Length: 253
Image 1 (cartoon, rainbow, N blue to C red):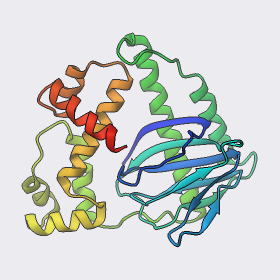
Image 2 (image 1 turned 120 degrees about the vertical axis):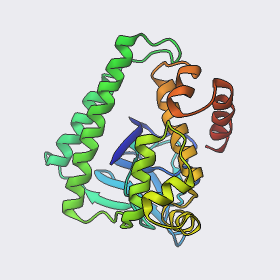
Image 3 (image 1 turned 180 degrees about the vertical axis):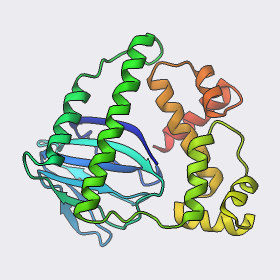
């Protein structure tokens, strides 16, 4: 299962940050510029032009760049079930005119055709265009990850009990979900399930559900839906409670 949240082909922001407590994965393709990250040992590692970097789930990163020569890159924020577990970025070479290179060019073509609109007043037609674009980006990313996996295995987490519960959250995030319900799906006792889920996912089931709902909420709002409509769609009682949760979420990120 794959969910795409945000994507673009741009120069990196300054300062360039990937917040460790925002638990997503990130696909990078480096087009140019002078940027780097620090590995688990604190060693500076450059981002090299023409390479893909896949940032694993909840990997703590510190990104930096030369403000005079900012990093030009494609990025896609996404989450998979199962998640990618590694303590370093996964790095892949991209040969010009290869299948991977062609897919990245296709992504850029689609992305640059995005019709910009005001977040709170998007006409239905433009909203539908955005949805279709996102579906195409998701399809492209699925193929890119498959091709990368064929070249060198992507280390997905391998806990089928937790995977079932993550998939359930992704499919039913708008409904009330309890730890008891998830533990039953995992065929584990509640306390052991919470401990095991936290070990695999880096947070409790409740925290994961809440964060996933907020990612979804931001996606709805970006498409121009109202707070009230979005709250109903992502499982919040009302617009006020969602607004408060989003403010806390934005402050953390």
